[in-house]
Image 1: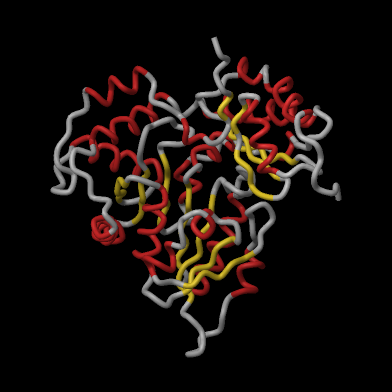
Image 2: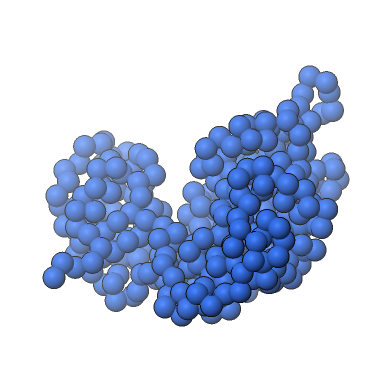
Length: 352
């Protein structure tokens, strides 16, 4: 029998457990667009309570919750401030421009984190020559920052700048659950400085589909309009909501296992000559590692040939992500597989 692949591409590869499938099969459902799906109602109320907001709206994806949030808070021609590697800007298909018609002002952060001073430095004066700055977006944890946690103290300082200048603050919290588990800070405390918060259920929590946007009642009424406009109105969506509810009830605390496994993964990779990885830089479940002298895309293919699936980030940087589909025992084979991949690939890029 072939050894199954060690799939470290993303925590989005998680599959529903047998118990989650049973919960989905038994879920009471209705027509959510008409407002009568009880499972969706239960999930939205649960998320709003967890995040300390008045209301929430269930949507198919994190991209949709983020982009609906942009549309809720802005008008075409406004400006949104983001970190330069933010998922909203980097991985959402140019949607801020295409859907909300907004300009993106970028701040080059430190592994995804920027400060109140950084924000203050890019604020524009009020002038007819400039776009109107409306919204600041943060990401916690930060995907391209290697799952880095945004410190709550820095978020609070940024929120103070926003309050002083009349700016709205939105959180892309696709992996907020990971930040909460790692720090012991509650979702409500982490969400308090924000006007709206997006959270995801289909990453480390292991639900098959779905994200939610939370905020005030008025904001969520507006969000429902844009969800419909963007094609996100679903009918018997309670089947999906049931998976998310099960995940919150049964697969939240186990996120710590993913964090421990990610550090173990980084330790393994860092011990192999030809790879560089720093377990001390792993905040949650994402490991960024490098292969000096070897192109990342070629290395990702060489690793795949050995049954290790990772994503190339460009240059000599790669990403591995742990999830409930990855056990400590499976990671035991990583050293041999990675060493074999390295041996199969000659250096092609000068080592700096």
